[in-house]
Length: 325
Image: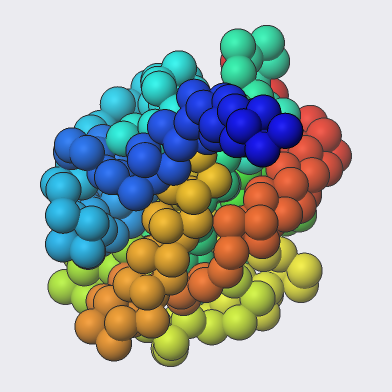
């Protein structure tokens, strides 16, 4: 009987070894090589900035290089699809944001479901959009912006970083709430849109603060409002749009996701390292310089947040009748 019990235990351990131990070994040895941080927009934009901010920290803490890989196209859908189809081993990650939750409603017939196919790993930080104009545009306040747009219906050109981005939804919501008629000009990302605004090819943008704040501080672009309900500590003299348009609020956030079925222990290890970065004094200072606010939390909290964001934007898109042409 003793021999049979021992044989049974050995057989059970052998079974466990074939199913659980490789997964544990993978987690303990992670990362085994360089890790790709996939960004769905061009270099220099707010999503790219978020990725490049966290990559050096993760590289140093985890002993392998975290490499930014820009895959712009289809308002971030090209990058998301690429990550969804990657091996779920933690070596391909997505730098994500509200565009991903927006696209779930805005784009019909997607061959993936962001909420289902991407495992939330960690928050990074939240930023306001800033409503900004080229210096040649004769407006300096939200009231003047609205009046100028109404006096010149269809002529004020507002650039944005592609359909489905928070910039796009922020503009559409503002347009719905104020009744202005403007020309929307989509770009592949914030970087080319800001370049067009600096050149005077377009008149205005609603842009996440990280990709515009340096130009604002140099006086190259004129900020007229931030889109959060309160003023930003990074631009304390710039009013919130809600001070003129009660109830208006928009913004952006960034986080890290992984392919569905990525081992939980890898997800949790990444979550711990990202949260450690967000508690670092130098990182806090850098995020504040970008106009951002750190968001610490578990992967479960990030998952709940994504579900709430998806539903929130679905309501905005449906009520405003926003469509991708």
